[in-house]
Image: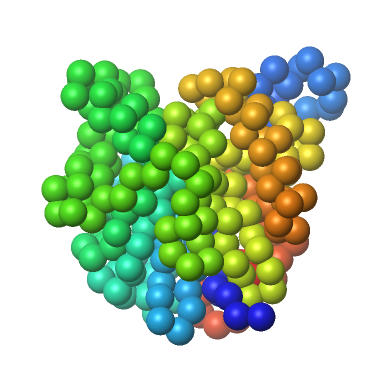
Amino acid sequence: MTGFEVLQVRYGERVTQKSVVLHDYASYGQPDGDLQMDYNFWVLRDASTTILLDTGYDISERDWLGEQPVISTPDALRLLDIDPAAVSMVVTSHFHYDHIGHLGLFPNAQVVAGAAEYEYWHGKWRDGKLAGEFATAEHLDAVWKAEERGRLRLVERATEVHPGVTVHPVGGHCPGELVAVVQGRSGPLILASDAAHFYEQIEHEWPFFAFTDLDEMRRALSFLNRLAAETGGTIVPGHDGRTRERFPALDGPASQVTTVLG
Ligand SMILES: [Zn+2]
């Protein structure tokens, strides 16, 4: 089977607790416990194309929630022998700081985003209402620049944005949250990004604490499970440290920070 090599790159990490990040966790009557929260972006590549899902951000400049840096995005790309100028597409799962902070690194990439994500954040930016949000004017500027240069592609419905890469707008965590289904070398992968941060959320369809629409987030979690049943794909949550126990590390210089998903 041909398909993309799909890599997960861990650029940061922190430890949190179930009761902190899972919405209304006390109501489940389950014991609390630590969760290893990884901060990731994803690389899809084959002989001719390199696509990124999300970009990470510069933790050394500002840690928002006590994130610890593991590697900077530029250093990780160097270890993986990826020239940012040769990245042809960056899919943004949503516009939070930890997902689009390095969007400006990729001068030639088409930027894919949910139309609802663009509308939501453009409105907040225009009205000067970004204070207290998980997004900054500086990060969003890279989206506006991509638009000015004709490199922004907004999607309103399930769309195959490149052969073997389909994005599904789901909302919930953010209004235009996207999930990506990627044809990997050993079968389909469902890259949930922040539609599901942790495995518990997939297994029990438990919402995350941060959402713009709780009902939509619940629908997004059941959609992920439906998608897995329909496609036979494996769901990969966006921030779960245990993904590194389920998949092997990449051989070579980037082994410490890169997990091979497919
Ligand atoms: Zn995130």
